[in-house]
Image (tube, rainbow, N blue to C red; front, side, top):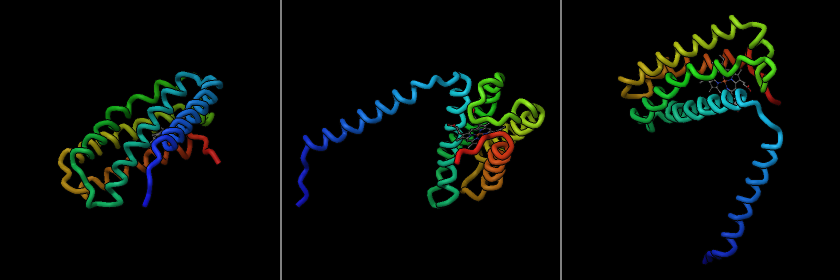
Length: 156
Ligand code: HEC
């Protein structure tokens, strides 16, 4: 029979928390430019929203219209926000030099992304299945990818 050892499991939970705190401190020791952090945080949230919707695309039975609408609305709203955090070319983060050498190209990508997320948000309002939103969802994914190809430094 499996036995629970409260003391031991508490200790290991504490150990993990401690480890996370240590890692957090290490990460903080390299100061990150606030603009880089702000845009990376927004991008991470984009990624989370895409994961939620992508999960429904993979398993259409799990489609939840309210959750999908919420994520689509979030993307449409936030789609305007990263770009003002790219003004300082000395704060490169993982952005390619092209962000500053090809300003027009970057702006075009950012605008087509805003358009794609607005269209996804519109489609989400009436979608009763993932199929209804699929073309608009794919267009948003393509837009993320297209910009990253030219403007984001790939790690590994
Ligand atoms: C117009 C260009 C553009 C669009 C559109 C765009 N991104 Fe990005 N993204 C970037 C750039 C540039 C970076 C690198 C930022 C940095 O490190 O300073 C980045 C970084 C990221 C990161 C890494 C964040 C981190 O923690 O370092 C994620 C995740 C990401 N994007 C997800 C997305 C998703 C998902 C979408 C679409 C829903 C999207 N992006 C749309 C340009 C774009």
